[in-house]
Image (cartoon, rainbow, N blue to C red; front, side):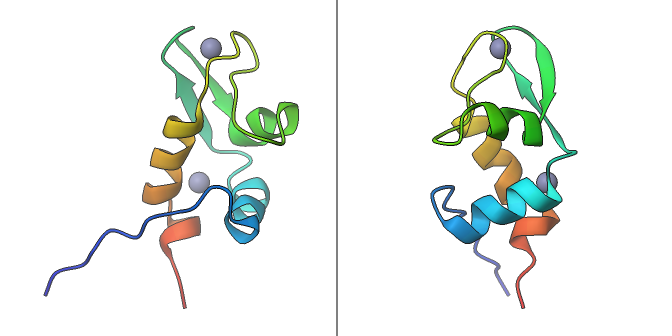
Length: 77
Ligand SMILES: [Zn+2]
Ligand SMILES: [Zn+2]
């Protein structure tokens, strides 16, 4: 039995709501300034995307990787 990895659409309103409500205390790393930031913080600063609060590096790929491995988003009824 194989389980295809569920892909998460970060532009999906439901996915974003889950990220904001359930993952706000989860942290994502910024490779550029070598720091970690809470998802709630990253999202609040830039509602259109996910940018590093300090260096404005695009964290979309990092957030996506988190979303695809976080139980909050992969657990589906
Ligand atoms: Zn999470
Ligand atoms: Zn940064």
